[in-house]
Image (cartoon, rainbow, N blue to C red; front, top):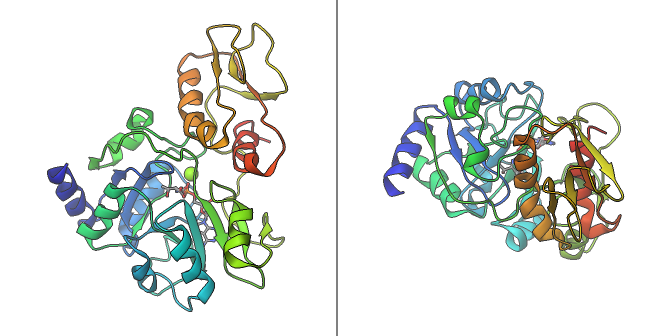
Length: 302
Ligand code: TXA
Ligand code: MG
């Protein structure tokens, strides 16, 4: 792995792409300070250039390299949640490529909780722009087996870090504006953020243009159409709770963290079977399931 990391760090320095594991999902990484390198990410993913990327740094102390006017609350959140699945939106430092931020004055940044991701930041000496390593609108990979041929072909090195432990993308919290606002739900819950900050946290996109870019309706989807149901019929393929009634039903955990860990791999497996549709039994409408329900609604294209 040491040799792989050296090759990967050298590729980053040359402006090439590397697939790197994180605890949430695998990322397609490039030097966040290089216009050319970041443009390669957009090309490889077929991602619209108005959809900004998340920047990864090795440790909280490196935050001033990518952000400026950092408020005390950001440091407090960094102390509590980094390394981990919380992304903070802050005013952008000049060093970060405007392609990374899609022309915004803000940057989304986090310290990933995976040793290979942090080691790649350290050895390359660069902040790493890394969206999920999937083709635009497809499922985010949580294992290297999920990587598509397009993504494999576009990357110089693929670092295998095993299955991503969290399994869904990071919580995105904007610290721009009057009130902290969750732009994307994830394992770090709104309640945990309110507890850390001692003030209310808003959820959802702000009205008006380009505050929460990239909030496309259809996202994270398998190729097979997804339908959300209360209960699968005995013949229907899909994800269920409790007992399964046919070989194309996969049993999911009642525990939200376990469910998140299993979700993309379960969808990937069913997608391989070329079924007519995938039914998903909806988990309860309660706060601990919020991030998963958001992913399921998006998988169903609603
Ligand atoms: O868990 C994760 O966050 C993974 C791993 C690889 O770290 N990355 C990830 O990246 O999910 P991606 O590109 O799939 O999602 C990035 C999201 C986009 O929806 C984008 O709108 C939002 O982050 N974003 C990035 N920069 C932003 C900014 N300056 N303001 C608001 N939203 C931003
Ligand atoms: Mg993504």
